[in-house]
Length: 231
Image 1 (cartoon, rainbow, N blue to C red):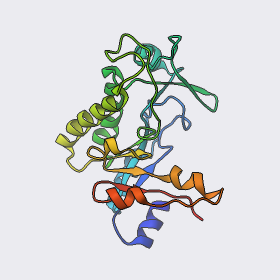
Image 2 (image 1 turned 135 degrees about the vertical axis):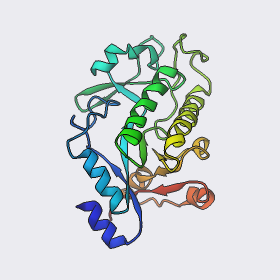
Image 3 (image 1 turned 90 degrees about the horizontal axis):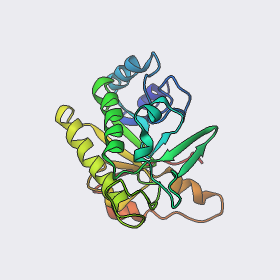
Image 4 (image 1 turned 90 degrees about the vertical axis):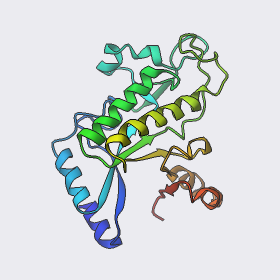
């Protein structure tokens, strides 16, 4: 109903993120976002029919450490490790996630698999890759990932390789598939269709500081920026 109302009000084709489309609760079992709710396939068809391009949420940097696939696929091999050799943690609610190293093919293949299922099997118009451009850099101390220990540019080169492979694979079958990320980062401008800039507007509103759209002024020919809280 919300999409239909916005589409009627705007009277132009639109795209929208899609959260909570899976049977698990939000931010549990990521990046296992499927199976979806029973309405998922019909919902995607209805959205496209009314001129709305659905972009489902994919948490693209961390893996829920108590998910069955984490154990079954021995995901700890692809986790980013701190100085004492343990995965970097990120607790969301009651769930403990581990940051994954994008320099590893295992992790990149996992995200490619998730995105391919959503776009090619469930008819989505693309995906929104949460945290990918907003997560910041971390030094990985693993000696098994094929990158320099701790320092290096392997985090952004790994994510770039993910996007190159993902776009190449998906767009062979769906040429107009779109890829958006959270945050902004110049290193992804040529391989990302746009960015969710919500946090950049949200974090400054409370303390009286102003947000100047310098990024948009410079890069608007190359990437779409969108997202703000209602005021």
